[in-house]
Length: 102
Image (cartoon, rainbow, N blue to C red):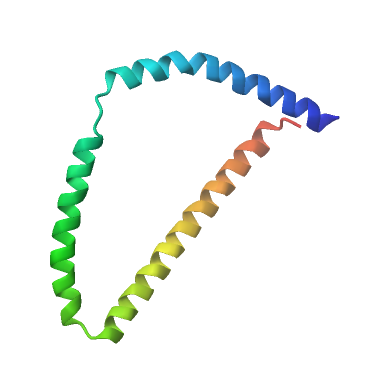
């Protein structure tokens, strides 16, 4: 019963927010120019630079060192991704708990 009521209430709130924000979204989308070509040019320039520079740098290193660097960066990225995600989830949980909808 409560779940159905909560779903209906949530649907109504989402609908109202969507109705309010649609004109604003269209206005902002019309005012901001399309930057996809600039982003593609920037990506290709950075990619070209890093491919040529990093390929030369990594070719100097022995294979064991390259593997160690890749594994270290993998663990580093995983650690920060997980820690930031858990921190954000805990923050959202505390906010929801503070609102006390139920």
